[in-house]
Image (tube, rainbow, N blue to C red; front, top):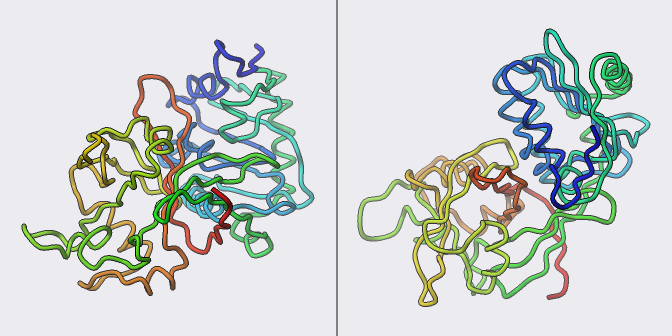
Length: 343
């Protein structure tokens, strides 16, 4: 079976998702390049957490580096996958192979082709991949085993990797279009939003400090992220809409997930802020409590963000099957050293 990702045909990730059911005991992937969106599209974190042995081997990470969001996501995925004998490794010498192997008690299927484990490789670019089964799939699995044995754990190799820059094109002071590097000379476009106000300060009673606002009693972690009017066109691509009550599943750079929703309404009918759906403190528990590590009952300060290494937050769309809930990769990884470009 040949999969090319051409318009009108099935995408590679559709074909793979159909086979990633409860009967699969071992998922082994060797890919030259990887992105959080590619892993999330195949629901690899959920798969590893459910007991499937997930092994991911990356071919060019030591040679070419990783963006900070990708490294953070892969470290979280490695932690989830290790209890069942899996994990994330990087190859010492580097390889350009792309192998996907799905094994169960009575069968083995594999994909051999040109698609990396990225949004481009799984969905967007025209690729050429062949499905194999039985003896041919076992030969592909043997090649994976060789690459796996020649690799080192990500936790050991991380100190030797360079960090790739994330480029941001500002559209006003509060938002911009951000590019997350994937394969060479390619990227995934998303949205970055400043947590500071138009004066460059962090509000003490709104935004991520909404829990300290006046009015009704609030949990100290209740918070929201403003949705600036200057970024509505980008936001519509990322979130699938900009109307109030637009919902999506956020998957974070460190492996958390929660439902989010666009809220409020501007005079033009667009939503004006982003928060967690239902429990308004869920976003703050992750962003303020877990990421920033602020447990005491006080507002976040601009100095807290600077010390952490991040004063903005980024959102990237993830490929999805039609009819399923939209998924967005949420990046608040520290020290991502964003590079500001032109508008």
